[in-house]
Image 1: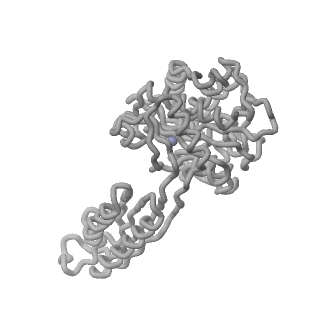
Image 2: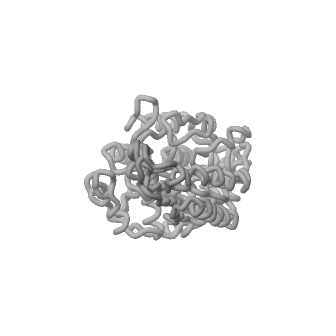
Image 3: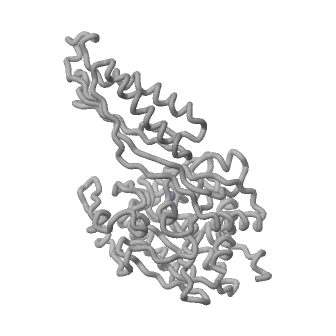
Length: 412
Ligand SMILES: [Zn+2]
């Protein structure tokens, strides 16, 4: 154990693997397009598995296509320490979202090999299937099935925009494994990820010690009015959902402002019907994504939004509803795992701060069944889900060193 504190990963090897992986599905603007269960996803999986076998791991695939690469420990009866993330990307994604977490975990294994260090518990490097949900809606599918949040049948029945099913596509790329997709006991689970937000960079902090994830929900607002001729119907005689929206929106954003700098409110999709340039729309649908770290603040935001929609629409003779499409309560990560990350950051001489995750991650699903926490590193301008996503090699190296020592602390 005496040489463990000086143990460091190879930043160069990690970076070169990241750049090799980025060639698969490379986009002209320097990003990656590796949608889940496409040929590009298959190529990335195969490259990852070849690296895992080169470093002596035993690779297994489960029924939903999650890949687990095991480095055995001294005591094979001890539950493994799991570390990893995902290899799939958004259609115009970056080179680091997800893939950094997978390859950092692989780098941890290779570093231990280089130094001939054996751990007590085995280490499993994981790549989860369809984290992004960009092709098959329903993000974090692989970890959701594995952790029992979603059934295998439900996941296999998901369809992409062309009508192709998740199950058929998983079969086509050859990744229906024989390992059951259900939680095996874990000693601990760590996921390292770029922050995908601007805070670490803005504060000049290297490591985010992630203590949990915020409450989030997706909602749909439907405003029904009456279709009418754009030229002949006087303004006062219209039942125009768009006018309703014009009153609702400023008040919705005011709600977000009232709930402090940690609140998030996004209207990402607005549709009208019949979507004709010279017809007053008869129906408007709009999505809302509402997030807040505090449960009661989140509930208040949703309730207030619903009330505003009702108030403004009824005053205009419009019928309106706000319905929940999906909600997920925030999670508090495991204290032991959080402490291991904090101690590892101190040991490595990194600046760090505790923070919540603003995005959903596979680790949130895993945390429902096993002790889990996350590590964040800065990304340039907080930009992610974007081909321009960038991270500093030195920050990735520092984060990977923190992962190494957190894994070592838990694996023994
Ligand atoms: Zn990700």
